[in-house]
Amino acid sequence: MEKVIDEKKQGTKLVMDTVAGNTKKLFIESYGCQMNFSDSEIVASILSENGYNTTNQLEEADLVLVNTCSIRDKAEQTVRKRLEKYNAVKKTINPSMKVGVLGCMAERLKNKFLEEEKIVDLVVGPDAYKDLPNLLSEVEEGRNAINVILSKEETYGDISPVRLQSNGVTAFVSITRGCDNMCTFCVVPFTRGRERSRDPQSILEEVNDLAAKGFKEITLLGQNVDSYLWYGGGLKKDFDKASEMQKATATNFAGLLSLVAEAQPKMRIRFSTSNPQDMTMDVIETMARYQNICNYIHLPVQSGSTRVLKEMNRQHTREEYIQLIDNIKSIIPDCGISQDIIAGFPTETEEDHQDTLSLMDYVKYDFGFMFMYSERPGTLAARKLEDDIPEAIKKRRLQEIVEIQQKHSAYRTQQFVGKTMEVLIEKTSKRDDNQWSGRIPQNTVVVFPKENYKVGDFVMVKITDCTSATLMGEAVGYSKE
Ligand code: 5AD
Ligand code: SF4
Image 1 (cartoon, helix red, strand yellow):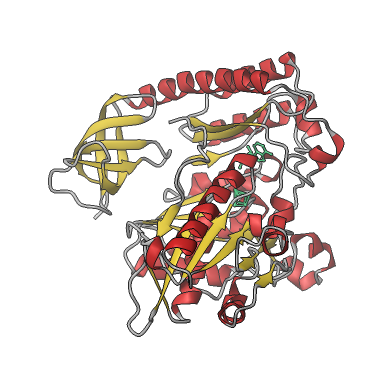
Image 2: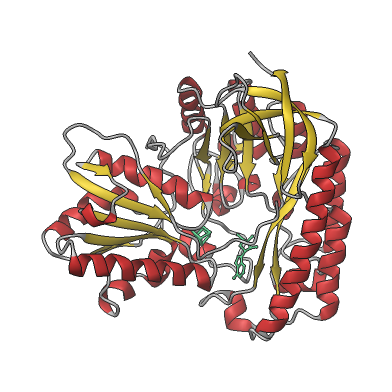
């Protein structure tokens, strides 16, 4: 199940139910992380109250929005290609169409899109979506519009997202925005601003609403979920200035997890992404305490070399990361763990690279997301370190990392063969219309014959075979009523 994220792949188009009376057509497409997909649902919700229905036909759109990613250069190149395509359609078929850029590229490049490049009508950063109706009236009057102000407060807690192209079974719920970690390679603190948490009450309301609508699994989303801290609003970094009362009644991530797990004991709870330095024993113990919190942690490591981790400003050593893995495995022995790793960070030596491979050998991740280092303008690494690892070496190191991961993924899936696992059915298998596809708590995909089961059922499946990415099996009965 190892993945090298392919930034060239098509963005995901979002289509929602038609609202009667809405006459304008919105084509909205998303690239990048889950947070972007979740944000596009917020945008669609805002615009559906302002006269827009979604369409998946670019040519007929009044408004085209692309929610963008800046994480690596390739991600930005992909969006640029899409902008060329929109502009071609605008020139040849639909001259009145307006084009807007949302998300991380909007925040990073700001009015360059409007002034130097003149390729879009609208630029909106990740904290400014509530301003879209105002910005659109500017655009309708023939002016370009921009809002890239980052906020101390904005969490969109009061907006109920429209679930776009949802399977009706799994949904994302965002709990924090922004990131304070300042990893030297990462553009996110610049594009998404400082870290802030969402009111647990509004999170609970959203989760309860999803449960009432029949959803069976939620993923709590944030750039750094373990650092969740609600003390009445405000930035995480200002917690020190909070009153004694606010400090005493604050909710941390472990607290939030228990609240959600208890509110909906029949729902599966997942979360992403965890940062090793912020993951506490409390969180691991809370996972163990509630049967409905899935035994799965996405725990990016980036490198297995303490020296490189230091250059990356990762706030943890190789040994501390290993200790965390040992703690997780001792408290939750069957916990699935996945990684993010960057190959070819500046100054990375062959020895550092070997440290990454040996760390992987120690952990034997279930799967992972692996990337070549891509220098991002404005980051600390770009300012302080030369991008000195030749492309060919980056490629070869990435290849070695991917190969080891493939071996470990195969090892992990093999461990499930012969066992009977709980699967939540999500959709028809891509390869076979007669098979369901779902996931076990550890996040590994399972396919099995449909029989009389249906989407949204929790089913016990006896695992009979596997590839390195997928488990195959046969249902033996329902897991929950
Ligand atoms: N180059 C390559 N990969 C990066 N990531 C973040 N920034 C960069 C970069 N400049 C990867 C990290 C992170 C994941 C979301 O993307 O592994 O965990
Ligand atoms: Fe891309 Fe990161 Fe921004 Fe998500 S937060 S859109 S992955 S740069």
